[in-house]
Image 1 (cartoon, rainbow, N blue to C red):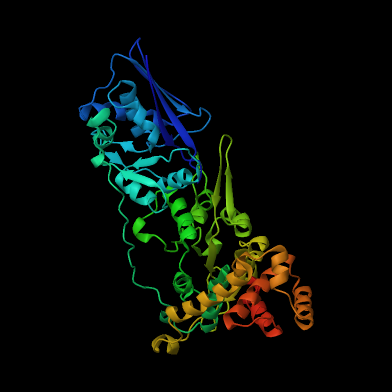
Image 2: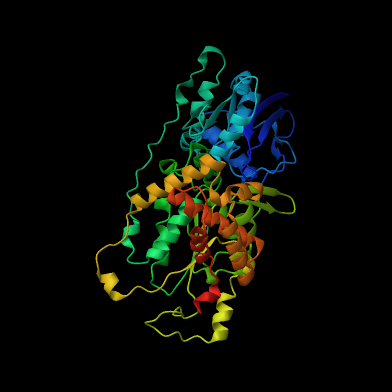
Length: 509
């Protein structure tokens, strides 16, 4: 009887728990058994591993009873990431490589039938988990080349890339025969400098909407734009990313890790804020995540970036209501009968919609054809509780032909971004978080009003019937307006601007 142990990692949401691949060879009726709550993709690795070993000129133990256990047994395993550790375990148990050398490594990689290594999802999550795991002897993470390049972004780890199964085998041969030259250092992919294609100066008119967008960028606040079709709502939304400051290293890692789990990460886009714009036919599971095993949705893929929902009223009601919790907590917990996954979802929501079914309500140039009941039904697709969670709600009116034909007006994105960056720096230096993240006692302390301002806001809240959530969101917006002006105290004029951004859909009628 022969035995070998190889270390690897699974994926569970953004976590990457350790998995021990145990291989046992015994006499008896030849077989290849795989146990340990393996998904279909993992069970299929038996055929991939067998073919990869044979085509690589390595010996598969055809006359043995092969048993592979993926421990712990109660942890679900999925994808082809365990192909490489299973193949190495079989070789070590058969004495073809040095089993003692395996303890210094962790392996993951899918094998082709020819023995080439293919990338795996979640390489960044694996690297982060290895970095956070205390070990007496630091281990080297061996991955396919593209996955190794991705993992190297974590820093502070020993990571190696291998193109072929034989490259790994040569590094694990007994004695002096070992040759690790096939395990190459990961290469740092240079960041691709994407030219600024979406500049705020391209939007004609809409000075009020541009100002609201600047406030939203400075405070990390959510925005809803309501107006007739063709008024620039989508143009404005897509220009928000150009106003936001660069991601910090930790924020970039968070964003990259969630994209890596979904297989949507590109090392060339490292450090860029993500803009996700799902179609309005997206389901609730597509927006917040789901499936078995649970996968991140658009809200999580937009973590530390922007989630743009165009034609908001056309989204399914259930999908929109599913966004309530992440708008408050910045996290999404996807629960299934056998599994649970916790995904981050600290996104900045930008939404756009028409004021009515025909889209012309409030347009001075074109009459609206909708009945009052039709308008109410259309606007009623956005529930009060969801609307209550959107910080800034503005009208984007139609622009006249003279403005459209005129030259570019307003400021360039680079100029506005400078003010946004300075305002965010003031907020973070003062309170440790952006204004959009203020809550509880910190909100009361940093958004304290004088007697005149407090009385003014109380009267407005009573008259408009605002909830406590609306009251506090106005304070966050006002605090951001103050930071943009470089002042210290919130005055009545600042509150007045913040209240103007807190409009109900019904105001468009």
